[in-house]
Length: 124
View 1: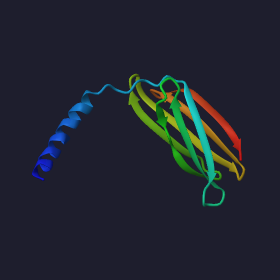
View 2: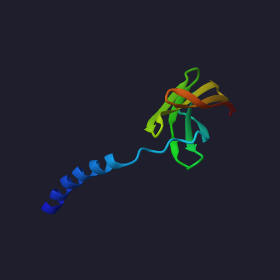
View 3: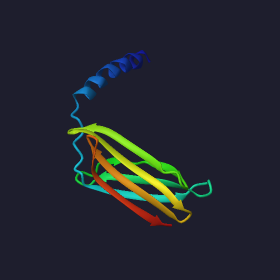
View 4: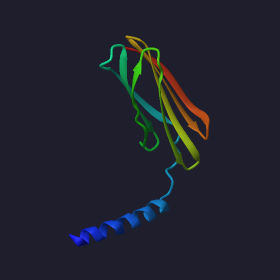
């Protein structure tokens, strides 16, 4: 039992050293796959909106937001991270336009500049 107690602090000391030696994540390629899905929320007129943003080059998932969007109120998600090449941000906005229509906008920014964007309206 005492060995377990002694080993735990040792592991905590070693792990930060290993983490600091790791390479920063690779810069996203700028080519993305975007999957979106909508389902009715318990609240009338609201939808649960999910997205999955994947870098096509290596299959890495960059963001996987899930939000509830209400009619007339845009639901905005941001997933920011640092990688080789600076700061990166994936933004997805969902807007319920009517009981049967939801719009979404996707934007990928590198160092504060939008370099990829897409938008669509989905009839439900």
